[in-house]
Image (cartoon, rainbow, N blue to C red; front, top):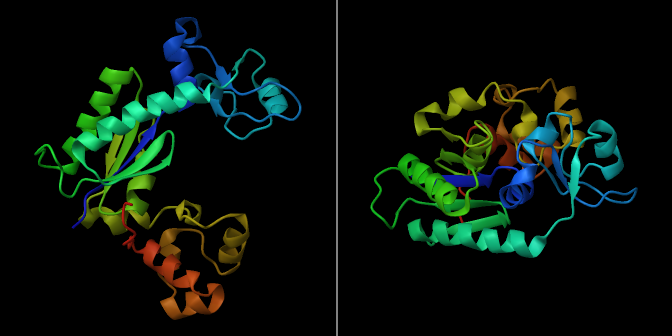
Length: 234
């Protein structure tokens, strides 16, 4: 059984700015350029309370959060912090798959430091990140990448959530189908027309039925609904 961790930094760009500028701590911070053609790169948790989120037009963010502090992004700084975090990951495993500057998968099935469980490894990594960068990270621990990524969002910010093999079905069944990677608005509309709203609803359909409707992706959909994901950390 594989042991996979997904680490996701909490409001990464905004948190780096709040770390480096103490006067911004506790205030709504919006990383991006203000202006009609700009979008939000990141929003602090204080800004998110006003409905601001990444990829939102900057003008809308300003309307939602007029007290928000717009900070121009400094990607060189964010890349440097990301390298620090990557160094922490590689103390524990060479199998690290970055998804962006602020998140990555780790395969800790054969952990390098002798920590006995993936949960303890995840908590150790989170402590090391906080100690060495003064930033918080959330972690998901599971038998595969699909489940670990869902889990990392479960106790944000600054949390760790574990899905053990025997818990997979019970965990997945009530989830909205939008939690499945690849299910966007168009696919959700089709699934709704099929009477499918939750992952559990997908269990009423055979793999052949899903392939007939979605082609090759129907097999992947059937597998993910059952928590099956053999994709490697690369």
